Image (tube, rainbow, N blue to C red; front, side, top):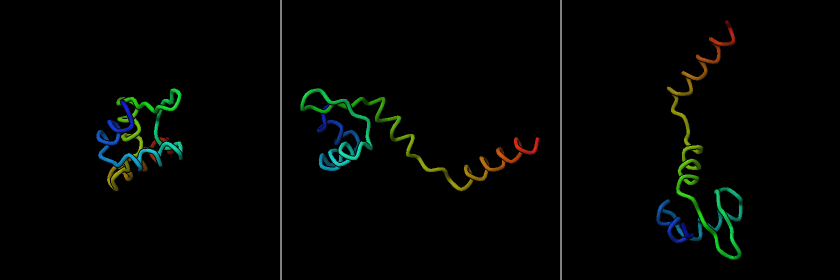
Amino acid sequence: MTIEETAKYLKLSVATIYKYVSNAAIPVCKKGKRLYFSTSELDNWIKSAKKLTNKETANEIDNFLSRRAA
């Protein structure tokens, strides 16, 4: 996808996408002067930024402690 398509896909401005690219915060492929984005890589990027709920965090702590005690 182009940067314009990516901005529309993520519901962000083109300027925000450029900011993420300059900070190496978003997966991108650069060919010459053009930037290209993969929908599957963007989807994984979004999923990796997901924050856990308090319940999910508590469950992870419980699981960790139970494995450690064994």
